[in-house]
Length: 81
Image (cartoon, helix red, strand yellow):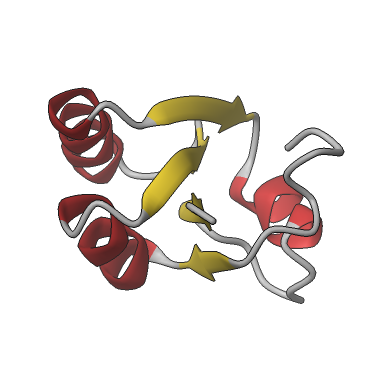
């Protein structure tokens, strides 16, 4: 995530992120490349359908750290302001 989205509100985790994308609340999705293939494909397809930008992170651990949580995360979304 770049510095201009670091302070934006976000949802972390598959269910919350998926819901935010479907409801049009997501400006950008952050997806870990090492998450389950089916989960990643679902998120990519949803982002394409709803016009949401995607930024990839190499690992779930790195994405979790970027989001300020102590565990890995498959996905997070930055909320539209």
